[in-house]
Length: 360
Image (tube, rainbow, N blue to C red; front, top):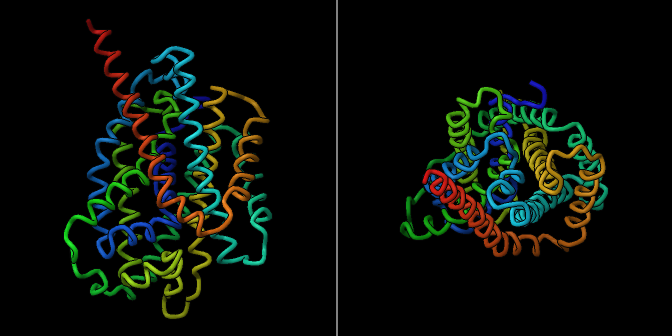
C-alpha cells in the first residue's frame, strides 16, 4: 500500500480545500453580492455545483492509474497535454497566492499589526516546504489531523454562539426577489467548486478501495457545504446584514461572542485557528499540485522550495494593500475561475469524444 491513501484521507483533503476557500472572504463576499439572502446562495450553489462534481468524478475515472498531467498527455498527446497542464498549474498558482495573502494578512491585521507580512509568512512557507518534501501520504495525514481539530473548534464556536443568534436578523426572506441570490450563486459556484479540481493530481487508483470513491466524494462535497452554510447562518444571525457588510472578517467578529458555560469567553483567537489550519493546508496542497504538474511523480527537493518562495514573494510584494486585494478578489479572480472551470469542461468533453471514437 505504499504511496496510497484511504478514502477518509482523500475526503478530508477535499473538505479542507473547499471550506478554506470560503474562509476570510466568503461571508463578506456573499453579503456584498446577495445581501441578507447570502445563506440562500449557499443552498443554490450546492445544487448548481452538482454537475461540476459529476465532471470531477468523470475526469478522475479517466485513466484512473494516472495523475492529472499524465492524464492530459494520454488524452491530448505529449505537447498539447503539457500545455493544458501548464495552464492549470498557472491558474492554481494564482488562486493559491490569494490564499497565502489571505492567510498572512488575516494574522497581521488581527493579531500582529506591527509585524511585516514577510516575517509572518516565512514560518508558514518553511512548514509548507517541509510537508511537501514528505510526500502525499504525509500531506493526507496532516489533512486528517487538521480537519479533526477544525471540527472540534467549529463545534466549540457553534455551541458558544448559538445563544446569540437572532432569527430576526435572517429576515426578510428574499427582500429584493430571487435575482440577487441567483447572481451571487454563480460567484459562490466559482469560489467553492474550482478548488476541488486540484485533487485530480491524485490518481483514483491511488486511493485504497476505489469502489467507494464516488460515494465518499459526494458525501464530502455535501458535508463541506453544510459547514459553509453553518458559517453563513451564524454570522448573519448574530451580526445582521448591516454589520456583516461592514467588517472585513465578519466570521472573526462573531467569535468574540463565544461564551461557554458562562465563564469561558474571549476564546476567539483559539477558535480562529481553524481558518489558519485550513488556509495553510490549501496552499500546501496547491504546491504539491503545481510541483507534480511541472514534473510528474517528481522526487525533487528543490521544486517545492522554488514554488513556495515564488508564491511567498508574489503574495507579499505584488499585492500592495487590502483595498487592492478586495478589488482583485471581487472583480478579477471570478473571471479566472470561470476560465479555469471552462478548461475542465473542455477536458471532460475531450474525454467523452475520445471514448466515443474508441467504441466505434
